[in-house]
Amino acid sequence: MKLSAAIAVALISSCLPATAQQGGADLYAQRCAQCHDSGNADVRAPSRTALQSRSFDEVLGAITTGPMASFAQGLSNDERAAIASLVTGKAASHAAAENAGQCAQNETGFPQPIDGPRWNGWGTDINNSRFQPAAMAGLAQDQVSRLRLKWAFGFPDTSNANAQPSVVGGLLFVGGGDRKVHALDAKSGCTRWEFPTEAPVRTAISFAPLGNGQPSIFFGDVRANVYALNAATGKLIWKSKVDDHVAARITGAPVFYSGVVYVGVSSIEEAIGSRPTYQCCTFRGSVVALKAETGAQIWKTYTIPEAPHPTRANALGTQLFGPAGASVWSAPTIDMQRQALYVATSNSYADPATDTSDAILALDLATGRMLWHRQATPKDSFVVACFGTDQSNCPEDRGPDHDFGQSPILVSLRNGQRVLVIGQKSGVVHALDPDHEGNILWQTRIGKGGPLGGTEWGSAADQDRIYVANSDVRFLRDGTRRLNSSEGGGLFGLDLATGKIAMQVAPVACGDRPQCSPALSAAVTVIPGVVFSGGVSGFLRAYATDDARLLWEIDTARDYTTVNGVAAHGGAMDGPGPVVVDGMLYVNSGYAQWSGLPGNVLLAFEIGNP
Image (cartoon, rainbow, N blue to C red; front, side, top):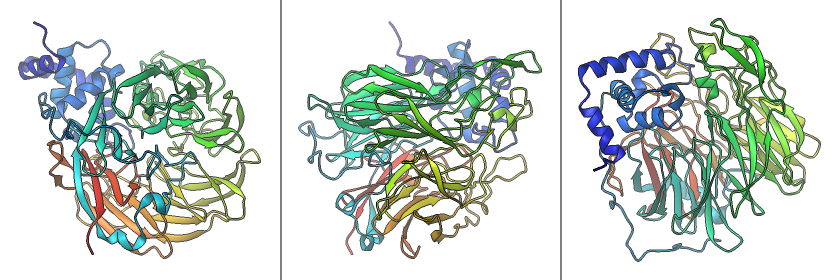
């Protein structure tokens, strides 16, 4: 009789003898300690303390088929289980009852018309504005103070809630670290269907009807797979792997336009490339165009045209390669007028640095041909080893790690001028001219910047301003990697025509709140008259766009009773931002990656009685 993988792992972990635990400690020291035990808080890997908040299954998944699989290459199942047990202090968990929180069997199809109120994909439109018009939002400025929690949904066996939901036709679609995509009734939170994925899903989910009228959703996972599902039933239509590199992943939402799905490809090679025995680095970011009906590739354009080649040997004699890097972390932006798409890229990973890293690229929609590029920070080559004790694989021409983590926003001003605006980890907001090869219109500094500084995941724009949250998260320099509770934060509204700061919110201090930072790393969202911003503190706040007055705030860092019976709690807010649709607001809470409070909950708020 064959045991399921979950049962087998549970038996392995519960029966590990002391010698196996010792083996776990030895393996951890060999494979994991360089990053996770580093006293430098800027190292990208979560600290050993942060790992203790995660479940056994989450860590085991990460080192078996997830982002850390390359570090555990060659290990047996029991050796992987020993590491997971060692760092979490836990054994395999038992999943919640499969039928908990299911909708009634007679509830099928879409509860509302699919052309009604919606938030589709990352930025709610192909311009990635993150601006929700009044007709779609169903929430006015004078109603925001009456928002009350309606329901909560818990993601099992994960400590991060970092995949933004999408809402179309009264259904909410969301991925998670539990390796599932969930379709929920947007009003009640009951589960319509679940789809198991090969790896965790961090992307927002994009909706579009295919040519045959079939309502479909598109998303990617952290093993560089793109999926298309029937949105009503959850049945797989196609699955396409868009990059074979061991470090490749998809973090930005795929974008549908005119029968084609466009997706950017990123990687974690700047983390795994830090091992001195690793031949760093060979990954190049890319944009891939797929036929929406079949998933067949139409074109693939690398963000670095030159293929990696051998450069030098490190101190251990390991052959190094370059150029590499220029990942695409965010969703592409579509320009219908010029039939182009725009993406923002990450830093280089290796020498020689490339002029398409830390840059905005314009590509032809039909062919993928690069039309122009505009670099913001030259010579920014960086891997995590640059912050570690062993810097064998750190590029010789080391940069500040000031890449772009968010999508460019395409805006038409009231005078008809078009502007491409974006915030950078350098702490600078840029405005480019999309009609004149990205010429710089203005640049405004709003933060100090840094590896986790400046503007991180997403800004928002209406016709008058871009709204930018500042991270500038800092850590205590005492080797503990604890968050500094008094540095970072701030929210800004910049005039789109001039770049001048027209609205500003001061950082909100944490006081003695544990695992807290004033940093605002999560994406912001705008509706007419209101900007929403979630913080590493766990607070979600709403401010008036005219005078920056506080309209509403909620502390999400607490325990919740959930509609699906999963034990859930909120924590730090990072990555995705709020989604506002049809009088409701949806937001994820929980992000343990940078020593913030872990969490695993999706929250839904509605307008309460006056």
